[in-house]
Length: 369
Image (cartoon, rainbow, N blue to C red; front, side, top):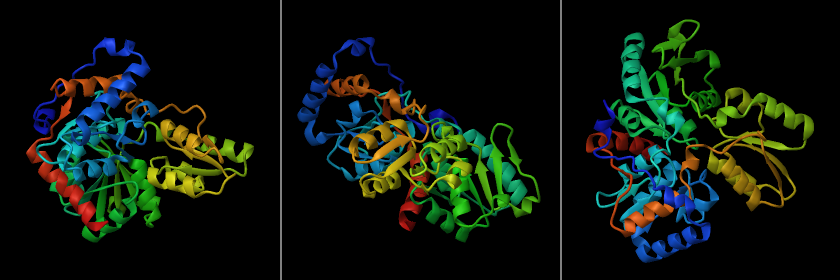
């Protein structure tokens, strides 16, 4: 399945250089004017990891699935300018009505994790795994995946998962089949499987580059097959980061996202989704100390929102997610001014065939949780 099978039309239109020379004040005023002009016809979802310069204009903030669902519930919006990354805009397009148009301000805003599992690799892997294990495997995919991967999972009886409901969905999956193929983030898969009692010894890794199963032992013992993918941001939180906090700030709580490695999660005090992290900090007592292991834009925003608490990044040298950072104020202004002229820049359109199977995977998850 090629990319052209996934999208009906998708052009990577580039923002003119002139937008980079405009003042912040002028651009902010333009966004406000255009939002007022379009009113309810325009809807701007903003992911938690976006820059403050973009988030300030978001109509709703949240994680990827929350934003796609919010867009789907907003039937009045003709134009959804999705401030996130490509796979999120795909999900929004699949869940919204036909008359609604989803735009991504910068097509370079992708996700390295989602890109680690393409459909050709997955088809090849499935053929080999079926030959090895027979019809004993149910595929699950993290929502941080392409529309094509979601469609593959939906077509093969599986479902999507989020970091909030991964545990419930993995438990459900084991009522359906003996084994699970978990795409594309090995760390979320490993941490979740471990939490429901699957020993590490019963987890194998599928290497899509070599098209081989990485496992030492009797393959009949394998219960979870982890796709060899990861989040480039969360993988940069290390055991050394934790050791440093324990040594220099022994009273500090450590909270991390389950996209971090098993070693980091096991040594932390708390681990959970972005929503879990935000709510845990909000509920914490004034004066408490926290080291947070997640994306830097979000950590900085949490620090600003909670001046009564001592909050730091678990990794002091962490950078924001580079692909999330692609969408900035100039790209937002360019997209909105295009709408004002009747132009649709960087529209995301997923084909009906892909949408049908991908939505099936999403609906299985939503029906169960």
